[in-house]
Length: 281
Ligand code: AMP
Ligand code: MN
Ligand code: MN
Ligand code: MN
Image 1 (spheres, rainbow, N blue to C red):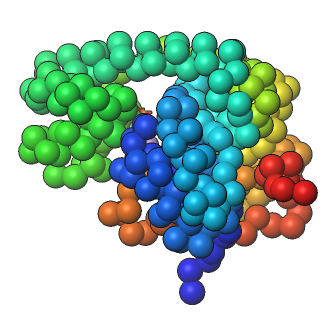
Image 2: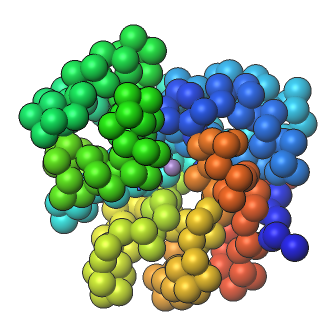
């Protein structure tokens, strides 16, 4: 039987690169048997009001969240903000900056794709016409629609991934800055999918130490799509560094059947859950 968790604190809506609009996402997540969810769109809080309004209708607990793109030692990684006040000034200012970065990055991606022989300009025009936030997922889906790749994974492998023709390095803010915006907004900062970054074990521990020193609260110990080995390593990382643990699927798309909301292992009892303070008393 598949594992099941009533907690899923990493989910995407159409406010960033998810396929379901915020209210439909909440209904879907509740229908998957999840009792407490967080909406964590990339670099935006635009979906939160609609999701929060749907949550009591669907009978699910809701945590306002975000997934910020940041840099650590020049490498891009993702930090979740959980339990944020989406209107907090420092976070709002930070997110406004992310939007500017994403817009100019999208222009550069489109140019590089065009130079490499892919329909970069057409791809960006379609993304803009749809009014979507320009993420690489949108580039990937549109490249597939334009027959420049066979599927989304193929679009990353051929065009958008690290070292590929459409890859650009992006001046995201520092991890410590993103973490500070989250904590100033009353949220807890959590390193998303910590085993997905190509780091040595030692560098990963240094990342956690730097993050903790900057006010970080936890790491995502249980993530969608991770291997058993990833999970064991993330568990030992949380135990060694004393960071709290989170659980999240990183769900984007109901058409991807192997990663539904809530299909997640339980957090081991040896790790303090990051969500304790968010549960109703
Ligand atoms: P961005 O934040 O614009 O760089 O886009 C990153 C998003 O692209 C991630 O959150 C994933 O949803 C998606 N992504 C990254 N790599 C892949 C991949 N190899 N296959 C499918 N989706 C990917
Ligand atoms: Mn994504
Ligand atoms: Mn991520
Ligand atoms: Mn994500």
